[in-house]
Structure formats: structure tokens, C-alpha cells
Amino acid sequence: MYQDLNKNQASTIDLKDQWNSVLKKLNAEYGNEIFNSWIKNISIRNLDEDVLYFTVPTRFIRDWITSHYLDKIIFFLNQENSQIKRVKINIDNSLTANMLNIDKSSSDEKRQIFTRAHQAFQMIGP
Image (cartoon, rainbow, N blue to C red; front, side, top):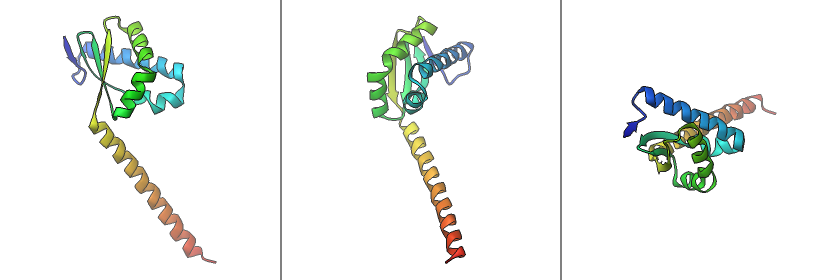
């Protein structure tokens, strides 16, 4: 059974609700700093038989999650849905591109603010 989570189905909604419950448990378990740095970057993609597929933006994030948090993720998933036996994490390069665009936008905005502030101070003068 292959289930594409991008399609709006009742069972898809249930699985997304289960994942949201797991996310809450992981946040409570590890705290906001670790959750925001590592776990929130996980995107649920599809369920195929007993394997739940996730994507993350980079290989480094995948490897870090696998070595530090995967056991707990699987434990909490099994509490929510006993049919899920395995998890596979793939790399989605488009997520990396989106993160870079967000960082670039933030840098551009900071540069514009700095430039305006610098111009304002020059107008005031000594």
C-alpha cells in the first residue's frame, strides 16, 4: 500500500495528525532548541506498507537525526501507529534551496536596514 501524503485523503489526515502528535512529544522530550534545530526540518512524504518516508534538506541533517533522534522518533511513531515499522529519511534538495533563499532574503533585508541606518547617521553628522 503506497500512500502519497500530498493527496488529501482521510487516512492521510490521520497520518499527519499522528505525525503532529509525535512532533509534540519530541519537542517535550528534547526541548525547543534541539527541536527547532533538527526535528522541525523533517517533512513527512509518504507511507508505503510499513515504511514511513521523510525528507530533510541536507545529508548532514539526515545523518544527525539518524544517529541522535531516530530511535525516539520510531518509538513515538509506534505509539501513534503500530503499523509503522520502519522509517526512511531521504534528502530533498529543493528544501535546501528554499532554506538558502530564506537566508538570502534575511541577509538582503539586514543589509538594507544597515544601509538606511548608516545613511541616517551620516545626515546627522558631527
